[in-house]
Length: 401
Image (cartoon, rainbow, N blue to C red; front, side):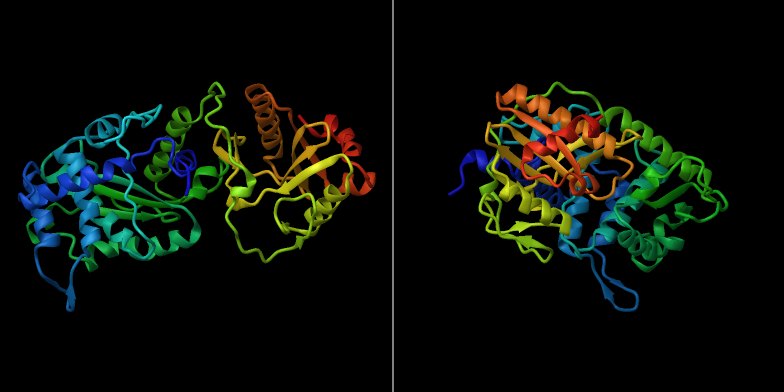
């Protein structure tokens, strides 16, 4: 049996899942009532997509969960006109202990769909819904231009297949004949050249473009580059800010980590709470053996990804990143150490070091327990040949910034 505190760890800080049952009930009634409150264009689209039989040449129909996802977006944005998180929670949440987002300046919706359930089809329908309302209804609160960001290259290539040349808008029954006259839409894929202008446009890129260095050569449309740049700058201004550290809860025990498979190097250790120390490389395995033998270490653990511990930091471009430390160790005098073992250093190492050191300082102040940070380079470890953890502390002044 899990406690309420443990279950709370599974919830996001700005949870909106408690709103789902009430939203679903409202959407069902709205659907059964014939989509009252929607524009004529929206009702035409919904009837065309979900209530009309399609053959091209085989029979085609959108799945119910795809329909429900799109109807939910339309109901919240167009009918209920809930475009911020605060009224969303006030209207639909049954709990009163939910935290509000600090920045709630624009509409943000999340549609949770399983892998392979047809998210791309829902995106294409959402784009058409916004575009046709912007053009046919002359509504300036609907969009005609869209930025679609893939999280990695694999997803980017899949999306390219669907959106290149506007393919999905012609192969799927998205555009009703009554609205085809309004369709003037171009799909730009990252790396493509500028084309003739259009009323609407979709720009498809991947998240790596957000981190590219300025001055890199590109033949992409100016509108696409400007859209990405504007979005990045706007998000950086509102998403990254200094906050006063707070102790949110008492923390978690490493023993709560669920069992997990491991195919890389391991080592049996007496001082580790896990039956085997899961190491990513041979140096980590050597360092774990050292900690297990060091007389001034009472307990230690290699922090597995499954435990979910990470320290927030910002890189050189003010992008929010997450640093996952390697080891945690407790010395005989009661000091906790976060230890980072390094073979090679990357460009963000200074920012990671600074964030880890600040985390230790704040945690010491908030908990009353002593925490410190130590980075151990492989070359220095080999040179020192330490026999106790205290031997490594000579590295601390020179390695931290």
